[in-house]
Image 1 (cartoon, rainbow, N blue to C red):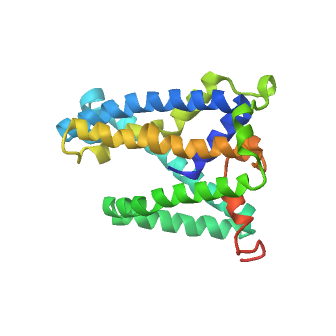
Image 2: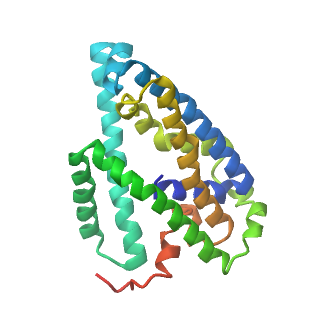
Length: 248
């Protein structure tokens, strides 16, 4: 449940319209559930993490290649997230981008050193807070934009650069890499069924919530640059906050 998915959800809505965007994220999340859920079931039933599953599937050398490939992708995703943090905060408050990237990198990396326990604590705080902030943003938008019109939002239509298939691919791509390594977490499940239920809370529930916020914000006409920043709702919150852009 990350801001990136609100961005992508909004971009999909901008290109396809409200209902087609809903269809795209529904299909994409169903694919993720089937894929990640299967890997999680194996993890919960056997206790095998991603590395052990990959070694059994691809062998010793194939496993090394697979792990190296995915590790590279995830490092790139991590870099993307620190950059997104910086550019978003800079756009909202005018903070120095380089300094924000450095701070975000130290903060995010520091959490990983604490381990799974830290991630669970962060998740228990961040997930509910994400929903609260998203609902606040929608509430602020509703004060000046009729939300009833979102159901009729058609996006840019034929002028868009995205097909339904491309949108589904984008939804799957957002978590196909980390989803492949979900066994590192779901291996601790009581059994395979519990692992699948844990996966269900992510795909479609948490993932779609984040994407839906982006779709609603763009469909309501409240996104500043829907073609590029999609349904990023932080600017909506920042415009109503007490922190001025001149703050450093």
